[in-house]
Every structure is written in C-alpha cells, then in structure tokens.
Length: 308
Image 1 (tube, rainbow, N blue to C red):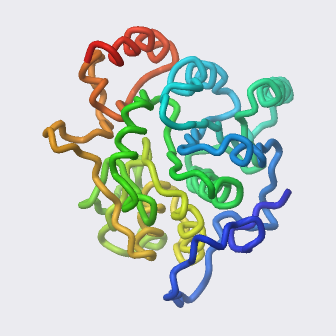
Image 2 (image 1 turned 60 degrees about the vertical axis):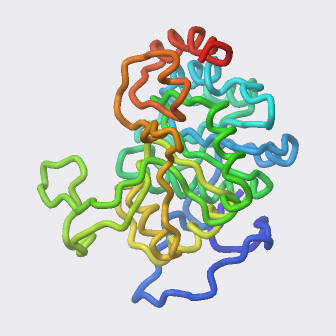
C-alpha cells in the first residue's frame, strides 16, 4: 500500500485542516506518496481494539532485545484498568540488507502484531521521515484513538500515571494538544562538529519555535493529520523534534509542559534519574534505560501501584 500524507482517502473528515494556507516558494514532501511503501503494517489494529492511547515506538531492525523488553514491561496489555492502550514498533530498513534479521522481524510481526515497517533507510538523519511516518499512520489508520504518543525505546514509561493524567485533562485536550518536555529557547547549532549542527542554508533563522523533546511526547490524534498537512510547508531538517515544532508553528499550536499542582516539576523527565520506586511513580517518563535495566526495575516498580 502507498502512504499518502495529503490525500483525504482513508482519513477521517471529522478533523478539519486549518483554513489559512501558507504560500511558500516551494512545497516539501517529507514522505512522498510515490517514494515509500509499507513492508509490514497493522491497518486494522485500531479498528479492532478501539484504543484510548497508541504508543508509537521508533526502533531499528536489530533492536530485538529492546522490543522484547518493552513487551515485558510498559508495553504489556492491561496496565491501565480504565482504558485500552496499544503499542506499535515503527521501523525502516538498514542501509545494508540483513535477510536473517528481516525474516526474524516478520516472524515477530506475525506473533505479536505490533510491527510497522516501511522501506526508507533507518538512520539518524532519517528520523524526521520516521516521525512523519508515525503521524501519517495515526491519521490514516487510528483517528478513533483519543491520543498517540511518540516514545523512544530507551525510556521508562509509567502507563497508568499517563492515562490518569490525560483523563484528568478533560475535553480541552482532545484537540490541538501536544504535551511533553517543552524546549522554548533553543537556537540552531552552527558548529559543524556539533551533533545537532544545522547549516544556515538549511535553516537560516536564528531561533527555533517551541518544541517538545523527541524522547517522548503525547498528542491528540487530530494533530497527526494537521502536522502531516503542515509538513508540506516546512523544509525538512534532520532534527525530528525541532521539525515537529516547526510544523506546530505553522499551525499556531503551542506545546504544553506537563506539570502537576503538587510542584513535582516536569512529568516528562528527560534527564537520567536513579531508580526509586515512589519517585518514578510520580513521573510519566524517565530517560536512559537499556533493555536489561528496564526489565530489572519493572517488577519492583509495579509495587508502586499499592505502596506509593
């Protein structure tokens, strides 16, 4: 099947696009309908499961251990007794084909039904393509869900706390809502040796609009189609979280910083924290977990449901 960001086919008309259309000198197709195709897909998953929240996890073909760890921890079914939460792993292809790993992935897909794969090359500089793949998949196949979350594989996620937090937001968060660790004062790095280097030719402005850290953020599913639409007017850059922020800027949507009235600070903790059960029980995410450590703490963390 060909993915199409801009066609109305397969996309709910209940989500209107912005009325004001930018008029740049050129349009940019991050995922061109004629370029990338599904290798593996789960097109009927949301229709069958009617999820409240869908977790979209970008990984690579070789990240078998990470996928296994997530299925054993925060990707388990039934972690929130109030709603249905689904997870999906989002994958491209390696620069050099690996038939053995690909065959293993296809077996995984048949066994677990949680793999989406497209035929772009998985690389750091193609993370923007992968992120737009996530937005397009939600817009095409999962508009019935209330929320989606883009979350990296090295993150600890407190699913129950996240669901309770979203339910507490009420109807106001059902439209044009995106929440995470907001970065509002960033400027482009012009040092060519910097990991986040952006040339003036690629991005001539001296500042970035507010954006959410790409480690993890949650958004109302209506935004997926709107971001896909806005992407036509934003020149692609390899910083996927900044790129989403540029699309939000086109839409006039401001990302939300996740806090509570209890003064707990950022609920999307992008720093690394030493594990402590009741501290983690009051966070939505914590950064920096390899598969072994994630599995190691999970059994203890589940005790927080009754002790914290």
